[in-house]
Length: 484
Ligand SMILES: *Cc1c(COP(=O)(O)O)cnc(C)c1O
Image (tube, rainbow, N blue to C red; front, side, top):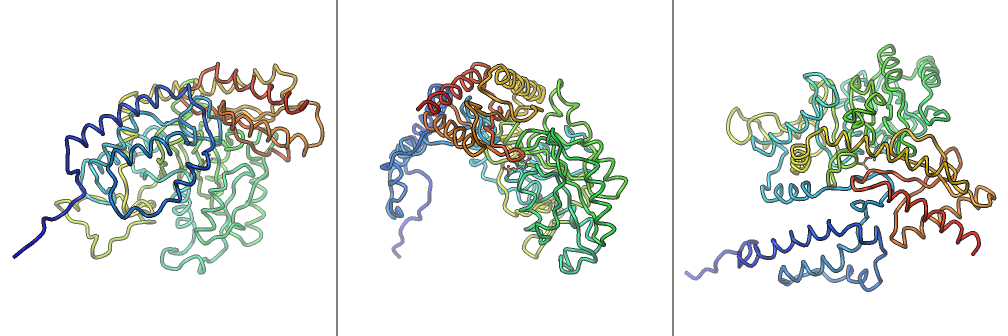
Protein backbone atom coordinates (compact mmCIF):
# COMPACT_ATOMS: atom_id res chain seq x y z
CA UNK A 1 0.00 0.00 0.00
CA UNK A 2 1.32 3.40 -0.97
CA UNK A 3 1.39 6.07 1.76
CA UNK A 4 2.98 9.52 1.93
CA UNK A 5 5.19 10.36 4.89
CA UNK A 6 3.41 12.40 7.58
CA UNK A 7 4.06 16.10 7.73
CA UNK A 8 4.80 18.29 10.74
CA UNK A 9 5.70 21.91 11.48
CA UNK A 10 9.27 21.17 12.52
CA UNK A 11 12.01 22.71 10.32
CA UNK A 12 13.26 20.52 7.47
CA UNK A 13 16.76 21.66 8.31
CA UNK A 14 17.35 22.11 12.02
CA UNK A 15 20.90 23.39 11.51
CA UNK A 16 19.56 26.22 9.37
CA UNK A 17 16.80 26.97 11.89
CA UNK A 18 19.34 27.07 14.69
CA UNK A 19 21.56 29.52 12.79
CA UNK A 20 18.59 31.80 12.11
CA UNK A 21 17.51 31.65 15.75
CA UNK A 22 21.02 32.71 16.81
CA UNK A 23 20.85 35.61 14.37
CA UNK A 24 17.47 36.64 15.79
CA UNK A 25 18.99 36.77 19.28
CA UNK A 26 21.94 38.82 17.98
CA UNK A 27 19.53 41.24 16.32
CA UNK A 28 17.48 41.43 19.51
CA UNK A 29 20.55 42.49 21.50
CA UNK A 30 21.37 45.12 18.87
CA UNK A 31 17.76 46.31 18.99
CA UNK A 32 17.95 46.85 22.75
CA UNK A 33 21.46 48.28 22.94
CA UNK A 34 20.59 50.71 20.16
CA UNK A 35 17.23 51.78 21.52
CA UNK A 36 18.39 55.23 22.69
CA UNK A 37 19.52 56.15 19.19
CA UNK A 38 16.21 55.42 17.50
CA UNK A 39 12.98 57.37 17.32
CA UNK A 40 10.69 56.59 20.24
CA UNK A 41 7.84 56.26 17.76
CA UNK A 42 7.46 56.81 14.05
CA UNK A 43 4.58 56.65 11.68
CA UNK A 44 4.43 53.77 9.25
CA UNK A 45 4.93 54.87 5.61
CA UNK A 46 1.99 54.07 3.31
CA UNK A 47 3.93 51.38 1.42
CA UNK A 48 4.65 49.51 4.64
CA UNK A 49 1.07 49.89 5.82
CA UNK A 50 -0.17 48.54 2.49
CA UNK A 51 1.87 45.38 3.05
CA UNK A 52 -0.41 44.58 5.98
CA UNK A 53 -3.18 44.13 3.44
CA UNK A 54 -1.46 41.24 1.65
CA UNK A 55 -3.40 38.06 0.98
CA UNK A 56 -3.66 34.94 3.13
CA UNK A 57 -0.38 33.04 2.63
CA UNK A 58 -1.52 29.71 1.26
CA UNK A 59 1.91 28.62 0.12
CA UNK A 60 5.12 28.52 2.19
CA UNK A 61 7.79 31.18 2.55
CA UNK A 62 11.27 30.41 3.94
CA UNK A 63 11.48 31.48 7.58
CA UNK A 64 14.47 33.73 6.85
CA UNK A 65 12.27 35.74 4.47
CA UNK A 66 9.40 35.86 6.95
CA UNK A 67 11.81 37.19 9.54
CA UNK A 68 13.18 39.78 7.12
CA UNK A 69 9.65 41.12 6.70
CA UNK A 70 9.24 41.33 10.48
CA UNK A 71 12.51 43.22 10.74
CA UNK A 72 11.66 45.64 7.95
CA UNK A 73 7.95 46.24 8.43
CA UNK A 74 7.23 45.60 12.10
CA UNK A 75 10.19 46.28 14.35
CA UNK A 76 10.63 49.95 13.34
CA UNK A 77 7.02 50.74 14.32
CA UNK A 78 6.56 49.90 18.02
CA UNK A 79 4.58 51.65 20.76
CA UNK A 80 7.96 52.86 21.95
CA UNK A 81 7.65 51.94 25.61
CA UNK A 82 11.06 50.22 25.62
CA UNK A 83 12.62 53.64 24.87
CA UNK A 84 13.90 55.80 27.74
CA UNK A 85 11.91 58.78 26.47
CA UNK A 86 8.54 57.05 26.36
CA UNK A 87 6.34 58.80 28.91
CA UNK A 88 2.90 57.96 27.48
CA UNK A 89 0.01 56.38 29.41
CA UNK A 90 1.60 54.04 31.95
CA UNK A 91 3.68 51.18 30.59
CA UNK A 92 6.68 49.22 31.69
CA UNK A 93 9.83 49.20 29.57
CA UNK A 94 10.02 45.40 29.18
CA UNK A 95 13.35 43.65 29.75
CA UNK A 96 15.68 41.24 28.00
CA UNK A 97 15.36 38.48 30.58
CA UNK A 98 11.59 38.63 30.26
CA UNK A 99 11.94 38.29 26.49
CA UNK A 100 14.16 35.23 26.88
CA UNK A 101 11.61 33.82 29.32
CA UNK A 102 8.77 34.29 26.81
CA UNK A 103 10.81 32.29 24.31
CA UNK A 104 11.56 29.54 26.82
CA UNK A 105 7.90 29.47 27.90
CA UNK A 106 6.84 28.86 24.32
CA UNK A 107 9.47 26.16 23.91
CA UNK A 108 8.19 24.46 27.08
CA UNK A 109 4.76 24.94 25.58
CA UNK A 110 2.76 24.09 28.70
CA UNK A 111 -0.87 25.08 29.17
CA UNK A 112 -1.22 26.25 32.75
CA UNK A 113 -4.99 25.83 33.03
CA UNK A 114 -4.39 22.72 35.06
CA UNK A 115 -1.86 20.01 35.55
CA UNK A 116 1.10 19.02 37.67
CA UNK A 117 3.93 20.70 35.78
CA UNK A 118 7.04 22.75 36.42
CA UNK A 119 5.32 25.64 34.70
CA UNK A 120 2.33 25.51 37.07
CA UNK A 121 4.68 25.26 40.07
CA UNK A 122 6.50 28.35 38.80
CA UNK A 123 3.19 30.19 38.43
CA UNK A 124 2.12 29.23 41.97
CA UNK A 125 5.48 30.30 43.33
CA UNK A 126 5.56 33.70 41.68
CA UNK A 127 1.97 34.42 42.73
CA UNK A 128 2.93 33.32 46.24
CA UNK A 129 5.83 35.79 46.18
CA UNK A 130 3.50 38.62 45.16
CA UNK A 131 1.04 37.63 47.89
CA UNK A 132 3.84 37.78 50.46
CA UNK A 133 5.29 41.03 49.11
CA UNK A 134 1.89 42.68 49.40
CA UNK A 135 1.62 41.60 53.03
CA UNK A 136 -1.33 39.29 52.50
CA UNK A 137 -1.84 36.50 55.06
CA UNK A 138 -1.46 32.74 54.61
CA UNK A 139 -4.62 31.46 52.96
CA UNK A 140 -4.64 34.28 50.44
CA UNK A 141 -4.67 33.34 46.77
CA UNK A 142 -3.98 34.92 43.45
CA UNK A 143 -3.91 34.49 39.72
CA UNK A 144 -1.93 35.97 36.88
CA UNK A 145 -4.10 37.73 34.32
CA UNK A 146 -3.67 39.42 30.97
CA UNK A 147 -3.44 42.76 32.74
CA UNK A 148 -4.87 45.10 35.31
CA UNK A 149 -8.30 45.26 33.72
CA UNK A 150 -8.78 41.52 34.08
CA UNK A 151 -7.15 41.54 37.52
CA UNK A 152 -9.73 44.07 38.66
CA UNK A 153 -12.48 42.04 36.99
CA UNK A 154 -11.42 38.95 38.94
CA UNK A 155 -11.31 40.85 42.26
CA UNK A 156 -14.65 42.54 41.64
CA UNK A 157 -16.25 39.23 40.68
CA UNK A 158 -15.26 37.77 44.04
CA UNK A 159 -16.50 40.97 45.73
CA UNK A 160 -19.87 40.80 43.96
CA UNK A 161 -20.33 37.12 44.81
CA UNK A 162 -19.34 37.62 48.44
CA UNK A 163 -21.68 40.59 48.89
CA UNK A 164 -24.62 39.49 46.73
CA UNK A 165 -26.77 38.04 49.49
CA UNK A 166 -27.66 35.08 47.24
CA UNK A 167 -25.63 32.43 45.46
CA UNK A 168 -25.11 34.66 42.48
CA UNK A 169 -23.45 31.90 40.45
CA UNK A 170 -26.81 30.07 40.54
CA UNK A 171 -29.30 32.90 40.83
CA UNK A 172 -27.65 35.50 38.64
CA UNK A 173 -27.86 39.22 39.20
CA UNK A 174 -31.58 39.37 38.37
CA UNK A 175 -32.32 37.71 41.72
CA UNK A 176 -30.28 40.00 43.95
CA UNK A 177 -32.37 40.86 47.04
CA UNK A 178 -31.13 44.47 46.88
CA UNK A 179 -29.28 46.45 44.23
CA UNK A 180 -25.56 46.51 45.02
CA UNK A 181 -23.51 49.68 45.10
CA UNK A 182 -19.76 49.97 44.48
CA UNK A 183 -17.81 53.16 45.17
CA UNK A 184 -14.68 54.57 43.64
CA UNK A 185 -13.25 58.03 43.12
CA UNK A 186 -13.89 60.20 40.08
CA UNK A 187 -10.21 59.53 39.23
CA UNK A 188 -10.62 55.75 39.02
CA UNK A 189 -9.67 53.80 35.91
CA UNK A 190 -12.41 53.01 33.38
CA UNK A 191 -11.67 49.29 33.87
CA UNK A 192 -14.02 49.35 36.88
CA UNK A 193 -16.98 50.57 34.90
CA UNK A 194 -16.27 47.95 32.26
CA UNK A 195 -16.04 45.29 34.97
CA UNK A 196 -19.36 46.23 36.55
CA UNK A 197 -21.02 46.32 33.15
CA UNK A 198 -19.62 42.86 32.43
CA UNK A 199 -20.70 41.59 35.83
CA UNK A 200 -24.28 42.49 35.00
CA UNK A 201 -24.50 45.16 37.70
CA UNK A 202 -24.49 48.07 35.29
CA UNK A 203 -22.48 51.26 35.37
CA UNK A 204 -25.12 52.89 37.60
CA UNK A 205 -24.03 50.58 40.40
CA UNK A 206 -20.65 52.32 40.40
CA UNK A 207 -20.88 55.57 42.33
CA UNK A 208 -18.12 58.11 41.75
CA UNK A 209 -16.91 59.75 44.92
CA UNK A 210 -15.50 63.24 44.41
CA UNK A 211 -11.75 63.74 44.77
CA UNK A 212 -10.11 66.76 46.35
CA UNK A 213 -7.47 69.17 45.08
CA UNK A 214 -4.91 66.40 45.60
CA UNK A 215 -7.03 64.07 43.41
CA UNK A 216 -7.50 61.61 46.28
CA UNK A 217 -10.92 60.26 47.17
CA UNK A 218 -12.78 62.39 49.74
CA UNK A 219 -13.43 59.84 52.44
CA UNK A 220 -16.11 61.97 54.17
CA UNK A 221 -18.04 62.12 50.90
CA UNK A 222 -17.69 58.33 50.58
CA UNK A 223 -19.18 57.86 54.06
CA UNK A 224 -22.11 60.14 53.15
CA UNK A 225 -22.82 58.24 49.94
CA UNK A 226 -22.74 54.89 51.75
CA UNK A 227 -25.24 56.16 54.35
CA UNK A 228 -27.43 57.64 51.62
CA UNK A 229 -27.56 54.32 49.74
CA UNK A 230 -28.37 52.34 52.88
CA UNK A 231 -31.19 54.72 53.70
CA UNK A 232 -32.45 54.39 50.14
CA UNK A 233 -32.69 50.58 50.26
CA UNK A 234 -29.59 49.88 48.21
CA UNK A 235 -26.80 47.65 49.48
CA UNK A 236 -23.35 49.21 49.76
CA UNK A 237 -21.08 46.36 48.73
CA UNK A 238 -17.55 47.42 47.89
CA UNK A 239 -15.17 50.35 47.86
CA UNK A 240 -12.54 50.44 45.13
CA UNK A 241 -9.60 52.50 46.35
CA UNK A 242 -6.86 53.44 43.90
CA UNK A 243 -3.20 53.23 44.83
CA UNK A 244 -1.81 55.45 42.10
CA UNK A 245 -4.42 56.96 39.80
CA UNK A 246 -3.83 56.90 36.08
CA UNK A 247 -4.31 60.64 35.71
CA UNK A 248 -1.94 61.94 38.35
CA UNK A 249 -0.62 59.01 40.42
CA UNK A 250 -2.61 60.12 43.47
CA UNK A 251 -2.85 57.47 46.16
CA UNK A 252 -6.14 57.24 48.03
CA UNK A 253 -6.01 57.13 51.83
CA UNK A 254 -5.94 53.35 52.01
CA UNK A 255 -5.92 53.21 55.81
CA UNK A 256 -8.98 55.45 56.21
CA UNK A 257 -10.88 53.69 53.42
CA UNK A 258 -9.96 50.26 54.79
CA UNK A 259 -11.18 51.30 58.24
CA UNK A 260 -14.45 52.57 56.80
CA UNK A 261 -14.94 49.29 54.92
CA UNK A 262 -14.40 47.28 58.11
CA UNK A 263 -16.77 49.48 60.11
CA UNK A 264 -19.47 49.31 57.40
CA UNK A 265 -18.98 45.66 56.46
CA UNK A 266 -17.93 46.50 52.89
CA UNK A 267 -15.52 44.68 50.60
CA UNK A 268 -12.25 46.61 50.31
CA UNK A 269 -10.78 46.33 46.84
CA UNK A 270 -7.60 48.16 45.92
CA UNK A 271 -6.65 48.96 42.36
CA UNK A 272 -2.87 48.91 42.72
CA UNK A 273 -2.12 48.60 39.01
CA UNK A 274 0.17 51.59 39.22
CA UNK A 275 1.15 51.99 42.84
CA UNK A 276 1.02 48.65 44.63
CA UNK A 277 4.69 47.97 43.98
CA UNK A 278 5.62 51.19 45.79
CA UNK A 279 5.43 48.82 48.76
CA UNK A 280 8.76 47.40 47.53
CA UNK A 281 10.46 50.82 47.51
CA UNK A 282 12.21 51.56 50.82
CA UNK A 283 11.98 55.36 50.59
CA UNK A 284 8.33 55.52 49.57
CA UNK A 285 6.57 52.42 50.87
CA UNK A 286 4.64 54.39 53.51
CA UNK A 287 2.64 55.99 50.69
CA UNK A 288 0.72 52.72 50.26
CA UNK A 289 0.36 51.78 53.93
CA UNK A 290 -2.92 49.95 54.38
CA UNK A 291 -2.77 48.11 51.06
CA UNK A 292 -2.04 44.89 52.97
CA UNK A 293 -5.55 45.04 54.48
CA UNK A 294 -7.37 44.82 51.14
CA UNK A 295 -9.87 42.02 50.55
CA UNK A 296 -8.75 41.97 46.94
CA UNK A 297 -5.97 43.72 45.08
CA UNK A 298 -5.18 44.24 41.41
CA UNK A 299 -1.52 44.45 40.41
CA UNK A 300 0.12 45.03 37.08
CA UNK A 301 3.64 43.59 36.77
CA UNK A 302 3.72 44.76 33.14
CA UNK A 303 3.78 48.31 34.45
CA UNK A 304 6.21 48.98 37.29
CA UNK A 305 7.88 45.54 37.33
CA UNK A 306 8.81 45.95 33.64
CA UNK A 307 7.45 42.52 32.70
CA UNK A 308 6.92 42.28 28.94
CA UNK A 309 3.22 42.47 28.01
CA UNK A 310 1.06 40.87 29.19
CA UNK A 311 1.14 40.25 32.92
CA UNK A 312 -1.39 41.37 35.51
CA UNK A 313 -2.25 39.75 38.83
CA UNK A 314 -5.29 39.55 41.11
CA UNK A 315 -4.84 38.73 44.80
CA UNK A 316 -7.68 37.73 47.13
CA UNK A 317 -7.29 37.76 50.89
CA UNK A 318 -9.56 34.76 51.45
CA UNK A 319 -8.50 32.05 49.02
CA UNK A 320 -11.68 30.03 49.65
CA UNK A 321 -13.87 32.91 48.41
CA UNK A 322 -11.64 33.25 45.37
CA UNK A 323 -11.90 29.53 44.58
CA UNK A 324 -15.66 29.54 45.21
CA UNK A 325 -16.14 32.21 42.55
CA UNK A 326 -14.47 30.32 39.71
CA UNK A 327 -14.00 26.58 40.27
CA UNK A 328 -15.79 24.37 37.79
CA UNK A 329 -14.96 20.84 36.67
CA UNK A 330 -16.90 19.24 33.83
CA UNK A 331 -16.42 15.58 32.98
CA UNK A 332 -13.48 16.25 30.69
CA UNK A 333 -11.61 18.24 33.36
CA UNK A 334 -11.79 15.88 36.32
CA UNK A 335 -9.14 16.30 39.00
CA UNK A 336 -7.11 13.20 39.78
CA UNK A 337 -5.18 12.11 42.87
CA UNK A 338 -2.09 11.31 40.78
CA UNK A 339 -0.70 11.90 37.33
CA UNK A 340 -0.83 14.99 35.13
CA UNK A 341 -4.23 16.23 36.37
CA UNK A 342 -3.27 16.14 40.07
CA UNK A 343 -3.45 19.26 42.22
CA UNK A 344 -5.57 22.39 42.13
CA UNK A 345 -6.23 23.74 38.64
CA UNK A 346 -5.02 27.30 38.13
CA UNK A 347 -8.13 27.80 35.99
CA UNK A 348 -10.20 27.63 39.19
CA UNK A 349 -9.06 31.16 40.08
CA UNK A 350 -10.15 33.13 37.04
CA UNK A 351 -12.05 33.26 33.76
CA UNK A 352 -9.46 31.65 31.48
CA UNK A 353 -9.15 27.91 31.07
CA UNK A 354 -6.15 27.71 28.76
CA UNK A 355 -3.44 29.78 30.34
CA UNK A 356 -0.03 30.72 28.99
CA UNK A 357 3.21 30.60 30.91
CA UNK A 358 3.44 34.32 31.63
CA UNK A 359 4.74 33.48 35.11
CA UNK A 360 8.20 32.67 33.79
CA UNK A 361 9.09 36.16 32.57
CA UNK A 362 8.24 37.60 35.97
CA UNK A 363 9.84 34.73 37.89
CA UNK A 364 13.12 34.91 35.98
CA UNK A 365 13.54 38.67 36.26
CA UNK A 366 12.66 38.68 39.97
CA UNK A 367 15.21 35.90 40.53
CA UNK A 368 17.87 37.57 38.44
CA UNK A 369 17.67 41.07 39.88
CA UNK A 370 16.15 40.39 43.27
CA UNK A 371 13.14 42.27 44.57
CA UNK A 372 15.35 44.87 46.30
CA UNK A 373 16.56 46.15 42.94
CA UNK A 374 13.01 46.64 41.71
CA UNK A 375 12.30 48.61 44.89
CA UNK A 376 15.36 50.82 44.27
CA UNK A 377 14.25 51.37 40.70
CA UNK A 378 10.80 52.48 41.88
CA UNK A 379 12.39 54.92 44.35
CA UNK A 380 14.60 56.18 41.50
CA UNK A 381 11.61 56.77 39.24
CA UNK A 382 9.68 58.58 41.96
CA UNK A 383 12.75 60.78 42.47
CA UNK A 384 12.79 61.42 38.70
CA UNK A 385 9.12 62.44 38.92
CA UNK A 386 9.99 65.03 41.55
CA UNK A 387 13.01 66.14 39.51
CA UNK A 388 10.80 66.75 36.47
CA UNK A 389 8.28 68.62 38.62
CA UNK A 390 11.08 70.86 39.89
CA UNK A 391 12.34 71.50 36.34
CA UNK A 392 8.83 72.47 35.28
CA UNK A 393 8.38 74.65 38.36
CA UNK A 394 11.52 76.58 37.37
CA UNK A 395 10.20 77.40 33.87
CA UNK A 396 7.80 80.37 33.81
CA UNK A 397 6.38 79.18 30.45
CA UNK A 398 5.33 75.88 31.99
CA UNK A 399 2.72 75.14 34.61
CA UNK A 400 2.45 72.10 36.87
CA UNK A 401 -1.15 70.87 36.76
CA UNK A 402 -1.31 68.47 39.74
CA UNK A 403 0.68 67.60 42.81
CA UNK A 404 3.27 64.93 42.03
CA UNK A 405 2.70 61.93 44.31
CA UNK A 406 4.90 59.39 42.55
CA UNK A 407 6.17 59.14 38.97
CA UNK A 408 3.40 60.87 37.00
CA UNK A 409 3.79 64.54 36.15
CA UNK A 410 0.97 66.61 34.66
CA UNK A 411 1.88 70.00 33.24
CA UNK A 412 1.34 72.28 30.29
CA UNK A 413 2.81 75.04 28.23
CA UNK A 414 1.32 78.28 29.44
CA UNK A 415 2.58 80.44 26.59
CA UNK A 416 0.70 83.73 26.22
CA UNK A 417 -2.34 82.20 27.88
CA UNK A 418 -5.67 82.27 26.07
CA UNK A 419 -8.91 80.34 26.46
CA UNK A 420 -8.89 76.77 27.76
CA UNK A 421 -9.71 75.56 24.24
CA UNK A 422 -6.76 77.49 22.77
CA UNK A 423 -4.37 76.19 25.42
CA UNK A 424 -5.57 72.65 24.80
CA UNK A 425 -5.09 72.99 21.07
CA UNK A 426 -1.57 74.33 21.56
CA UNK A 427 -0.54 71.65 24.03
CA UNK A 428 -2.04 68.82 22.01
CA UNK A 429 -0.10 70.11 19.01
CA UNK A 430 3.14 70.18 21.05
CA UNK A 431 2.45 66.58 22.09
CA UNK A 432 1.79 65.43 18.51
CA UNK A 433 4.81 67.24 17.07
CA UNK A 434 7.03 65.63 19.67
CA UNK A 435 5.60 62.18 18.94
CA UNK A 436 6.08 62.69 15.20
CA UNK A 437 9.63 63.96 15.64
CA UNK A 438 10.39 60.74 17.53
CA UNK A 439 12.18 62.56 20.32
CA UNK A 440 9.76 61.76 23.15
CA UNK A 441 6.26 60.39 23.63
CA UNK A 442 3.92 61.88 26.18
CA UNK A 443 0.13 61.66 26.29
CA UNK A 444 -2.50 64.00 27.68
CA UNK A 445 -5.48 64.13 29.97
CA UNK A 446 -7.98 66.56 31.46
CA UNK A 447 -7.89 67.43 35.15
CA UNK A 448 -10.90 69.20 36.62
CA UNK A 449 -11.72 70.57 33.18
CA UNK A 450 -8.17 71.69 32.42
CA UNK A 451 -6.09 70.06 29.71
CA UNK A 452 -2.68 68.71 30.70
CA UNK A 453 0.27 66.97 29.13
CA UNK A 454 1.18 63.93 31.13
CA UNK A 455 4.54 62.24 31.59
CA UNK A 456 4.69 58.87 33.35
CA UNK A 457 8.27 57.88 34.13
CA UNK A 458 8.11 54.08 34.18
CA UNK A 459 10.87 53.01 31.80
CA UNK A 460 13.84 51.64 33.72
CA UNK A 461 16.26 53.23 31.22
CA UNK A 462 15.11 56.82 31.79
CA UNK A 463 17.73 59.25 33.14
CA UNK A 464 17.59 62.86 34.30
CA UNK A 465 19.02 63.98 30.93
CA UNK A 466 15.98 62.46 29.19
CA UNK A 467 13.72 64.66 31.30
CA UNK A 468 15.87 67.72 30.56
CA UNK A 469 15.39 67.00 26.87
CA UNK A 470 11.63 66.57 27.36
CA UNK A 471 11.39 70.00 29.02
CA UNK A 472 13.60 71.62 26.38
CA UNK A 473 11.54 70.18 23.53
CA UNK A 474 8.20 71.23 25.04
CA UNK A 475 9.57 74.76 25.40
CA UNK A 476 11.00 74.75 21.86
CA UNK A 477 7.79 73.53 20.25
CA UNK A 478 5.70 75.82 22.43
CA UNK A 479 7.64 78.89 21.28
CA UNK A 480 7.71 77.75 17.67
CA UNK A 481 3.99 77.04 17.48
CA UNK A 482 3.02 80.27 19.18
CA UNK A 483 5.04 82.47 16.89
CA UNK A 484 4.35 80.40 13.77
C1 LIG B 1 -3.39 50.49 33.69
C2 LIG B 1 -4.45 50.52 34.72
C3 LIG B 1 -5.50 49.61 34.70
C4 LIG B 1 -5.72 48.68 33.56
O1 LIG B 1 -4.67 47.79 33.45
P1 LIG B 1 -4.31 47.08 32.05
O2 LIG B 1 -3.11 46.30 32.38
O3 LIG B 1 -4.05 48.19 31.08
O4 LIG B 1 -5.49 46.26 31.67
C5 LIG B 1 -6.39 49.64 35.75
N1 LIG B 1 -6.25 50.52 36.76
C6 LIG B 1 -5.25 51.42 36.80
C7 LIG B 1 -5.16 52.37 37.96
C8 LIG B 1 -4.33 51.46 35.77
O5 LIG B 1 -3.38 52.40 35.76
